[in-house]
Length: 257
Length: 215
Image (cartoon, rainbow over all chains, first blue to last red):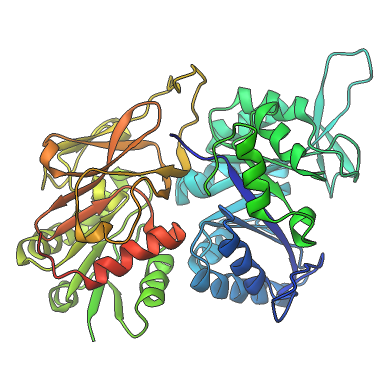
């Protein structure tokens, strides 16, 4: 008996529509994030992450309405990420019904923002998203760096030190995106997942590159993550959330069934 | 139609709890308010709360919510505290170097600690964040239809330890045992977030809306 490891489906949303495509046989509108989030909630998802990739200002207003609609119908924790750059963005999302916000690039350019946000809104609602890639060469000691712009731009910042710094500034959770190999569904980079999970005393969500259920298990057992986030394996019904949870349970992981 | 006052003292987002109440009982009047008259007029009262206890207690006192809470508890109408709204009812919290709380019940709010381990010796993260099993320590109308050891959603770094065992309505374990629900006459209070705990949480809110306050 103890705390369950969490499974978090992630929706990429642009102008109020899910963009990566989601395939459920029995929903009316597979592009509506609210309908999809509800479906995941019914399947037993432990939280929902809503990643807003809308570029335009008008589109951001749509996002607020979508979050409002979602919060009125989905009664599990909801994290909103993407475009969170100032305290006003956070306030708007929390007022719309989000429980947490995820701060990404803004933290790289102005780390004090994380501190300001945690002071104002509480650490429990501040997630810092980190995109990490291995930069050490074979034979060298493992080293991972923070990348921005969808993993294209290196920053020179050491990923583990950065995670520690974010937590010391008030991050209540780390959303770590890492991949063994770029864009391949080959699982998390377990080395960096474990290094960060062991370095910080707040929960770590492992994300990136999930292609099968063993990847989820590895992220928890070897990567020591507290939660796993995945998109496409659930969106296309390759696996359902109950299947994933039963599999994790069969491997000795405590889950909410 | 029944009405419920969700006491708003400016700490955290009350949208979720209001929506969850409307969801489980369509047509219920949910008043998100700090107005003492509205709180007095409501059939039921809910005291929510997120964030640091010092800020919460400061706002509770500044807005006169302390008096509203005392009056509501004494009135006999159903009262539900959630998260910091549970902690605030105790004597004292260790958070923020020590903060005096409302003192309605003898008990302390304590820090999980930096060295918290599970049975296997693995270090546990703080905050206690996620879905944990709740052991129902007594029969209560608010547990009606909720299976014992159902999981509820938690997010907190401080926990309640009640001084009187008779008041404990639910417990949980995270490196150590602690109290996550209490019951006393017309009052029920929980550490977890029923509004974020899907069926189990919605059922508890529905039970609250159907409860006459007797226990």
